[in-house]
Every structure is written in structure tokens, then in C-alpha cells.
Image 1 (cartoon, rainbow, N blue to C red):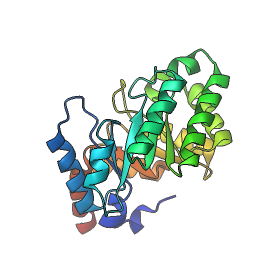
Image 2: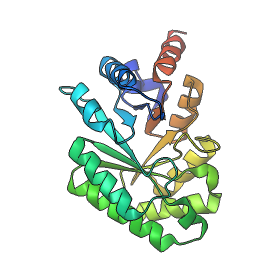
Image 3: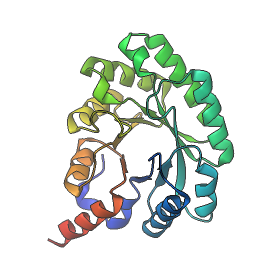
Image 4: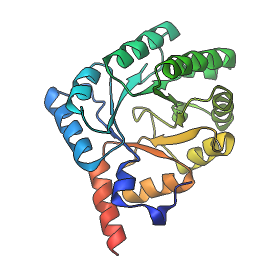
Amino acid sequence: MIQIDQLTEKTLANLFDHTQLHADARRADFEKLCAESRQYGFKMVAINPGPVALCKQLLAGTDVHVGAAIGFPLGQTSLASKLFETRQSIQDGADEIDYVIDIGAVKDQRFDFTREEMRRMVDVCREANVICKVIFENCYLTKDEIRKVAEIALEERPDFIKTSTGFGTSGASVEDVMLMKSVVGDAVKVKAAGGIRSWETCRAMIQAGAERIGTSSSLKILEEFRNWKAQ
């Protein structure tokens, strides 16, 4: 568990996946995203697969990872499509993969498919030494379904399980982070994403067990953190 009182501005920034996933994002938006990530030392830029090569070039010589969102944001593409998209993103320079599960399969209790999808995605990432994150999109799942997918993750061992895309009906909740963490313990990390726009919310997610934060409000949260530390 990350200790809030031991966080510095630098270590907090290194928890952030700095995010630009909008459909109308232009080259200038990605240049800004990468410049901010370089300046503040964010862990990763979270982007769609198209601009992966561009962001990899813009971040050359830094420790900032490039992360590709796969099957995003609905999860309703075939496993073959997700695997192709993953391999192409890795070829273009992605260091991390965040993929959306087939939510409908979970709702239909086709957990063998969920397990197979996760296994295949993890295997592709492992072969390339790339971090794999599994997006549940909890707003569409019951607590029992969240628990079941987390149990599958405990078997298949992606690097992270993640609450949300940020494009669903709601984002991360403290309750869901705690539930996911209670299942996977220290074997798999938890990423909280969606609706995290303040230091207060970010702090609550970290205290609940999140070890990575997905947000497009990284700079605002850092500013609020500075003010909080100065009190």
C-alpha cells in the first residue's frame, strides 16, 4: 500500500497515467500531453493506438511510458481484433496495454471466454515485456461480477486490473477499488480511472489500494497536492 504521508510531488506524479483519449484530439494535443508528461515525470501517456508512434517519438530519451487503449472504450471487438491491435501498438512502441474486457461476456456469465481473452492478452504482453492492464468498466458490472473477473485476474496475473475507461456511465469508486484489491491482494495491482479530478478523490483511491491513477486532470491534482502539503 502506498503511504500518503510519504508521497512527494515527484512520486505522486509517477503514479499518473496522463490521459488524452478524445476522438477529436489533434497532433498539438499529443505534443502538449507528452511535453507535460516529460516535465512532470508522469508514469505514462494514455492514448488510443493511432498516435502511439508519434508519442513514442516525442518521449524518446525519457522514462515516460506510452500506453495504448485496446478495444476502447466498449470492449465489443473480437479477441482476434484486440490481439492484432495489441501487437500493432507494441510494434509502434507501446510500453503498456490497457484493454477493455468483453463486458457482455461477463454479463452472460461466459467466464471461460473472459479467462481465455485475459490469458491471450497477457501472453502477448509478456512476450514483448509490456505491461498489461485489464479494464473492467465496473459501472456495468455487479459486485459479484467484479469479484469474479478479479478472481480470474488472480489466476491469469495481468500487471493491473483497472476500474473504468472514463467513458462509461460512471468512473472509479473507492468501494470498487477496495473490492478489487481485496480479491487480488498484492499479486495484481489496481488502477483507478474515470472521474478522478481532484487531490481529494485521488488520495481516497490511493488509500483504498490503487497503485496507478488514470486522469486527464494530472496538473490540477498536483497543484492541489502542493497546497495540501503546504498546510
